[in-house]
Image 1 (spheres, helix red, strand yellow):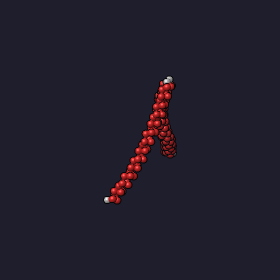
Image 2 (cartoon, rainbow, N blue to C red; image 1 turned 90 degrees about the vertical axis):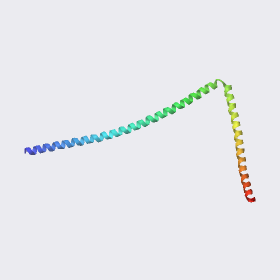
Image 3 (cartoon, rainbow, N blue to C red; image 1 turned 180 degrees about the vertical axis):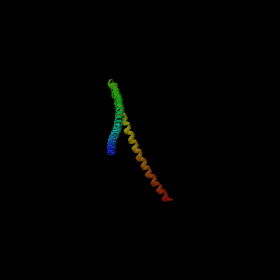
Image 4 (cartoon, rainbow, N blue to C red; image 1 turned 120 degrees about the vertical axis):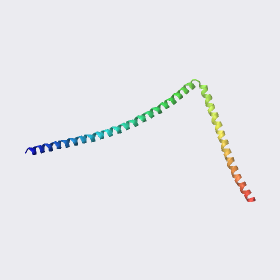
Length: 129
């Protein structure tokens, strides 16, 4: 009877140990899931921080450009004759650019005509030979 009692007690202790081990395994699995989730959150936050740093860099560059434009505008607004002179210079430049473009196009057309003439002359030379 005593042996049965000890065996039942041992079985009970083994069952309690198995139950405790199952609980610990469950806690371990939950901890692993939490760690994985925390790693994902950390990667996500790192990506967000990087995106925010990039946005800050771009905003800083844009601000610098705007400050330069403002400074230029402010300086020019104090001297309207300078603005008119610069506008005239821009118009003169555009006229010069358009004239140069026309000359380039005419030269390209002449070059094409010369190529065609050269090709015909070569054909005639070949026929004469």
